[in-house]
Image (cartoon, rainbow, N blue to C red; front, side, top):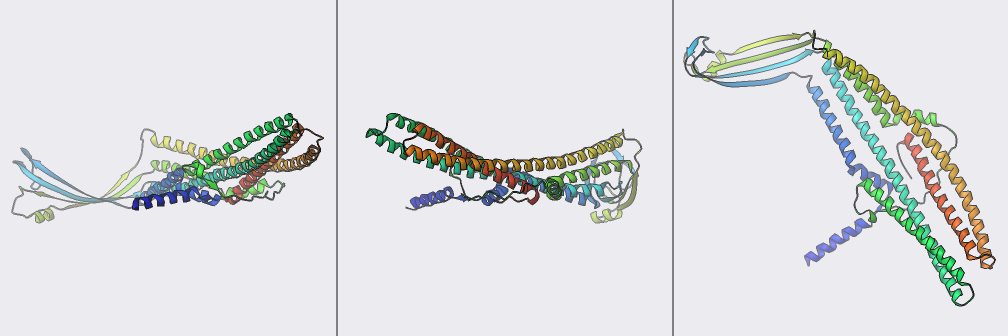
Length: 437
């Protein structure tokens, strides 16, 4: 009984999952939390954070302890008496040392600034990846809405034609109509069945694409929230330059490109530090214990009596190191120039994308207006043809031809509507960083 109840519970959970309806915000939130590529970007941020912490630690002095145990046989110098002896002895050497870099051409400081810059850049890279994912999800979501509406329209048309076929079949059987009328309507029915199948296939394909973006299984079960989308208000005025200047200040890809230039500049400064002298301050304390020391001294007494301390100041001045410093500086200068080109390319790409997006929405707006006029004309034509068909003034072939034109115009208008919605929202995304339907 418990096993049966358990399976019923699991089945109910599965049904709940299958019945889940996804809004656009649901899709975006789920993808932002579960997308594997975004998780990689987040790990990269953590990596940059550890590198930044390491750069901070490089500013501190080092502290190390060392110990060695030695066994000596034959003739050797006694480390305690400094005399030659020939016997077996054991000794223990202990030391603690510390050193700090006083000056290295500001290498550590520039490295710290670079790693902080890289950490900030990685956060903008994550934001760019999120924006790209949101755009893809929004397009896929709109595609499902479009294909679903197209499928519902095709289904209604198919049902109407089925009823029409039944009515004409009855009239043909009664001898009121010729059999050719039935054949024409059956041909129309086959055409609309084909359209219905194509619409269903496109709907399933768009669901698959959204499921793959969300990395979900069983894409057949995904259902999106039905929205009564209206055609957005659209301004035909050309204001791309104003919007471009605004987008430059908020687009994460542009900020990341600018930070890439900063990193290259810091790398160049680090390379130039190879020309500078290196000044290091160190301190060392050591002692030794030997089992053949003269006198009866304890372990602690030997370590105390043999203690040595030393302070050193080390200065290293580079003179010639196989041209490595010169090469590193030349490469750094090239990387600075290259990073500036990359940054300018990013800005140019943003401007081109916004110009293209604005042009696309203008074209989509004009296309939608033309499609609306076509639908109005097709409706009037079909209404006129329907009246004449009812009066027997036109045959079923002419009736079906007018009907197909109306179906095609309505399909074109629907596609133009969703295309316009996406183009307008995509352009707004450049300056608002939000995608709302």
